[in-house]
Image (tube, rainbow, N blue to C red; front, side):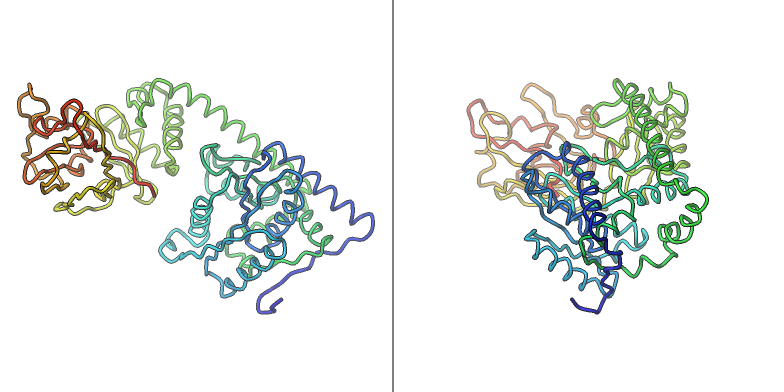
Amino acid sequence: MTESFPLSHDAPPLAGERHALCESVLLRRVAAGITPLLPANSAILIGLSGGVDSVVLLHLLHQLAPRHCWQLSALHVHHGISPNASLWADFCAGLCARLSIPLHIEQVDIAPLRAQGIEAAARRLRHAAFAARPCDFVALAHHADDQVETLLLQLLRGAGVRGASAMPLLSGRASSHRKVRPLLHCSRQEIMAYAGAHELQWIEDESNADDRYPRNFLRHRLLPLLGEKFPGYRDTLARSAQHFAEAGGLLDELARIDAAESISENTLSVATIKALSLPRAKNLLRYFLYQLGAPMPQTVQLDDMVNQLCAARDDAAVCIRFAGGAWQLRRYQGRAHALRALDEFDRNLSMSWRGEAELAWPALGSCIEFRQGVGQGVSLAKLQGADISVRLRQGGETLRPSANAATRTLKNLLQEHHIPPWQRDRLPLLYCGDVLAGVPGIAIAAEYQAEKGEAAVRIALVARHD
């Protein structure tokens, strides 16, 4: 191995019975914890940094995989922060090659996210890299000491019950990659002992010794002092985190009760927020945001959200930005909407359609789908040979939605269909030449509607497949 970066093999080797005991106890404990959670033939992606924790995790799962027909692969995220980053990637590649475990190295650019802080930016890029890989489960090397450090950091940041909850052994929704933490009940000392027993090698990230980072400060300076006075602090703080998790579960149950008649089509009834006590209203709003995958706002922001939703005039355009401006909470017709902030757009946007199945529509961060059908949609015959384009609303547009209806203004139709004001100027309008032929999801001009049995094009606005 190269000596250009720290390569560790520092754990004291164990001999004889003590060696065998270390192997069997840790392996059995990990197997007992995760075997009921991971079905046979599961595809498991291991997060491999090259540090001792992830190397031990890789070694353990490599032993357990044949027993359960698990399909292992590994992911190393090359952040490029350290001058040794490429050497770490080489180390991981060599380790996985020796174990015949497929490895994907994802090189990311942290520079655009540095304003979030190096640790937060790196974590966000890792999560994105995991989400992009095909697997059933992502295996992470979090252990008992990580649990304690995370709890203390969250409390020092003023986190609520959810933030102070324990990291679970298994997390995530069944519809996406689920995260499993096989080492969660193992201490750092036990992991080091296992690495020594198996004469494993790993890399040391030089930044782990820098106590300017909050987690390193806790690890190297505060927790050793805490251990002198309270040697059992890992277990007691882990219990506290579990209590927070249980309390969080109860709050979620309460929120689900409140949400049953107040959350519909990803919107929240403001009337319900007004009727609840302030703590209960905030709990429901947190639950609503969490269900949409939105970041949790700070306490002051959450108070402001409840206040503005409930106290603003009925005709007021409520828009509260949070998560650094990346998300917005809006109110329309008595309901709260949470959405990612929309990018600026070219108000002269115009795109030609030449028969594509899909067109990106940047004004709404979405796509326009064109699907051929029969009898429903825009008449294909009337589109063929014509100059077909998709444009933005300019004002004054009119459309006759059916043969027996009067011509209506587009403004009136959008209001009638309860289209929120922030979407109206961003909707795609389908033009045949200079004639408005339809608005996806709203109406098709009577003269362009397909007859029964006639070839047609159905047009819909859908979320972008990123």
